[in-house]
Length: 400
Ligand code: FEO
Image (tube, rainbow, N blue to C red; front, side):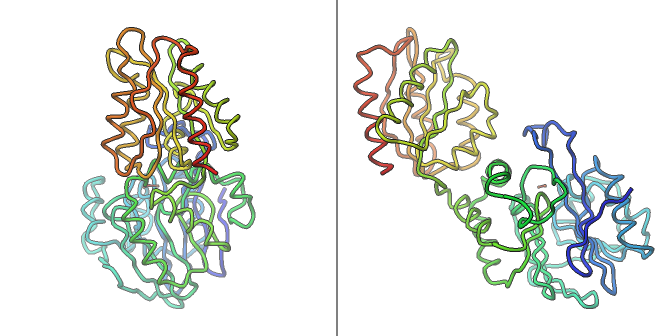
């Protein structure tokens, strides 16, 4: 049975939710599922903006068929060629043989790479600034390369002032029936997943996101329609400001994130004592992760969120504890920068972890270290506590 939603007089949401998928991209846990949004414009011509993931093919096709209400589909705009949005192009071509596909010069080679489709005579290539008229609506195409794939573009409806923003402004999380941001408490219920989505999927491409935000600033936008998560139809500055902060790699909050790795609890004990010292020094905004329990995508999300990061880890095989090393590599890959780090190391006979972690942090941009090879042997002892207390007080002072 179809389950589409009306957005405006002639625009419909025809996407669907997946609450079965365990791992998005086979990497990121989806405790709250994910939505794949697609939009159908019913003008003199019918225009579909993107398809969906194969996992929701039945729901998507039922929605498109029902919303078309007996009409044929004239155009498909492919804003993004990642398979969570383009898996059903062939199904549409089979159902609507006259269908024309609108994309840019980088879209069509990707279609041919992913799929064996006969697209000869069925494509319309657009470039930056091009517009196409479909009746009442004129759609204008805005290229958004590397946000987060090279072919990504956004489509701006000049008539109703709607920006179809591809993955940008999207989030993990299935829709619960409410489709619009003004029907939900985004800050309470969605922000953490939106940040985890942005930082892990798009985080590396801050400069490209900044370029798109500059283009968006030149458009009069009343509604943002992303490919995942809720549609924004008021308070747009909220999500635009978050994107501006995240893409400039600026901390969202003054506070401390502690990421502790521990084999037998001794390094974690040191980190816990340090957390208490921070609290006693007056720090209120502290978050603590045992990195063996917390998925690295959440660690990355909080690394983007907080101004000060404390990494505590033992030495392992004369190197960095593997899960901490993986987290550091992810930070590097996602271009983490502009943060203050303190490193608490441990090692029973040759403590190397602090030195090695600090060296890796040194490879990242604008990282400030406020420790230098602080390491305990096996467990924290009284002789180290004064140094830790001073470090906690220094951080508390900086957070005032
Ligand atoms: Fe939601 Fe980049 O795909």
